[in-house]
Length: 332
Ligand SMILES: *[C@@H]1O[C@H](CO)[C@@H](O)[C@H](O)[C@H]1NC(C)=O
Ligand SMILES: *[C@@H]1O[C@H](CO)[C@@H](O)[C@H](O)[C@H]1NC(C)=O
Ligand SMILES: *[C@@H]1O[C@H](CO)[C@@H](O)[C@H](O)[C@H]1NC(C)=O
Ligand SMILES: *[C@@H]1O[C@H](CO)[C@@H](O)[C@H](O)[C@H]1NC(C)=O
Ligand SMILES: *[C@@H]1O[C@H](CO)[C@@H](O)[C@H](O)[C@H]1NC(C)=O
Ligand SMILES: *[C@@H]1O[C@H](CO)[C@@H](O)[C@H](O)[C@H]1NC(C)=O
View 1 (cartoon, protein in one colour):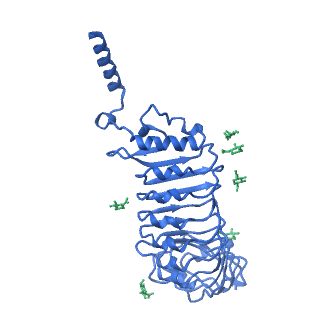
View 2 (cartoon, rainbow, N blue to C red):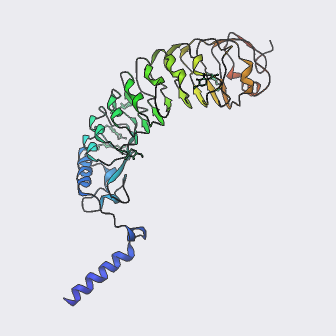
View 3 (cartoon, rainbow, N blue to C red):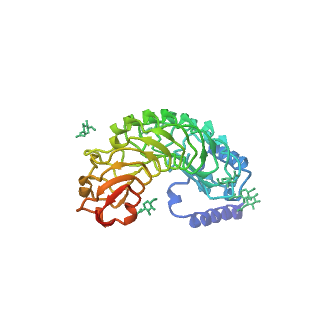
């Protein structure tokens, strides 16, 4: 009996000594419901090697790719990336009720559509389903996740149109829907975000039609509409009292007169290449501290204004226009 007690004591001393110091103050014990759900997710993904550390005998707060809240020990982050994972997103992810971050990334064999179970995750702030083969629509149920600050569904095979309801989210810092196969127009509601105005990345899709005038009412910091089939006027997006910084409208069919456009002083990146922009380069551009500028492959005419940075850009920033002239292009 004495020996046994001694062994127990020395064993616990050994465990005590070998534990990393932060664990002394907070012995994290995984929530048993969360653990059950994680094991269900692991099974649904066919027990991939990536999740080998998800051993039912151990504290799930120590498992690879998950994170527990320091106080409640509930699972708050699931970040699955870069493994050999095939199949669909297990609907069981919706049963981790305290999840704030959900990431499935760089999983080319991840297929199927985005499960509606995700709409149960009311604490979700950050969702990233990116570089996968997910297909189907962009679900409108994201609007039920009122605290969402970051929505990234880029580099997938999503189809259908952009749900106008997304504009009801008031805390979004960024929406990435780029590199999918989305069709239809940009919703009119995207000019009516209340609360924060998100950075908008819609490039490399099959979006058509004119950009709704409503977007001109908002002050986007970053706006990437490149590589779609968007058409018509877009001059209304600029303006002297905006604070936009990065704008990429390249490789569309935008058709408007650039001559009288007033660019905000905050602009550092302007790409308009491969459109049908006409008129001349406004002299006001010389007052903008641009770091990147490309108006090539348009229908511009007249002299490149002198002063500012305009003449420091490469000739390829200007070539293939109707009759632009002056350095770095040939003299007028
Ligand atoms: C994807 O699935 C194919 C076919 O089963 C397999 O050959 C390939 O290794 C998998 N790739 C990854 C990264 O999982
Ligand atoms: C991925 O897993 C599949 C089936 O388990 C296997 O055939 C394939 O070789 C694996 N691919 C890689 C890149 O590990
Ligand atoms: C995933 O997408 C890539 C590129 O689009 C494609 O080549 C591949 O066949 C797809 N894999 C599956 C399993 O659908
Ligand atoms: C949403 O965020 C606010 C502010 O951070 C927080 O007080 C609230 O509890 C959050 N709601 C949910 C459902 O997580
Ligand atoms: C500046 O912005 C405000 C609100 O965004 C707008 O009402 C006002 O007309 C703008 N002024 C100019 C000169 O564009
Ligand atoms: C401008 O865009 C054209 C067309 O894509 C490209 O060929 C050229 O290299 C670009 N130049 C710069 C400086 O980005």
